[in-house]
Length: 340
Image (cartoon, rainbow, N blue to C red):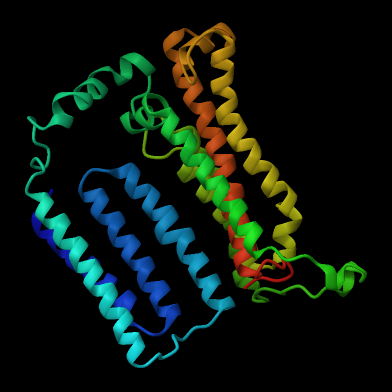
């Protein structure tokens, strides 16, 4: 770690945070918030947490910024001036943030030093993971083995939370087509997107490479930064690029609402299903080592590696479907008739 670089990045992060809550132009706030996420990505990388940085880059600086821009486009760009009440609400928020920040700063003194070898984390779990991950799971990437194997329960419920969030957005924003259900499909006006030939050509050429890279990130997450969450977000972003460069009709022709919900279900069921298969074979839930009984040419160790790849695939399917569903409903106000 280079403390001068860390201090510079941290200062820029604070400036971006203050600018995000200060500007009245919500579009500018969304862009600055994207820059904030990118700086957090750099900070995570500097701290050695490359997997977290990868997630921040794809989810925070990438898809989240697109969703914010879509929400601003469908609501309003300027914050309404509420006069004195506005300053009172900001004052209350500032007081609350300052109080919580003061408590956190006071608690930092009780934490062990960064990378302290005598800290509880360094004397119990971390040594075991670092020493035995490759022996137990045949997975070189410790982060993947921890997320998908040692604490697989937590990751499964994270996937379920993402799926539930997607269903909540659909339930809140989705609008029925009562007004157009008796009209022919040709009469429904859809957004034409960008008619610029260069934009459409570049986007069309980028999508296959984005999807191929998403599959690489998913399959190679055992050996390098990546995994189901990152691969799923990149895969979903490739479909969002189609909607932005062309129109919502082209996107829904490839990823319809029914398919999004179905794939979200399938992703969660794949994860939980592998756990139930372990139960049926007589082991604990998500104890992948028992899968060697049904996986050919596989011992108990390699079975854990293959089991992690299976649940990561389920995560990628669910995440990509929910990301697309979030964009479609936010960008079209739940009407599914036009996009940005």
